[in-house]
Image (cartoon, rainbow, N blue to C red):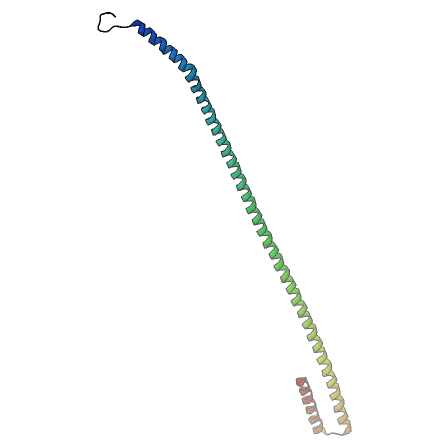
Amino acid sequence: MPNGIVSIDWNLVVWSIVNFVVFFGLLTYFGWKPLLRMLEEREKRIAGDLAHAENEREAAAKARHEYEQRLRDAQAKVEEMLNQAQATAAQLREQQLRQTQEEAAAILARAEQAIARERDEALAQLRREVADLAVEVARRVIERDFGEEDQRRLAREFVEEIGATRHGT
């Protein structure tokens, strides 16, 4: 050892450098390469997870789109069914109305026929009664010889009987 305050031991320096290089070589061979491999594997795993997450996001977006499309289709189908139901109801209403009108017309026609028949029967009855009364008056006139006063009284009675028959029937 030389006599100085600071002295450098070259032997120690050389062995320290050799130790450092050997330690660095060993660390590089045994530590650095596995560390790089681990970092690469982690990077690949993260990239795979990101790709998987992206695929899942796309699948979810596709599923949502399909769900929304099915929902729109279902709404359209419901609307179509409602429109068909309304159209069917309108047709049934119109059919019922036509049927009711036809039935009312048939009832009215039958009533008009019945009224006409009753009127014809009443007129026929009236004619028979008028004929019977006329025959009766003629018989009475023939049986007796009437004066002018008797003929007027007989005509009045005849008119009263016709009026009573008309109102009574």
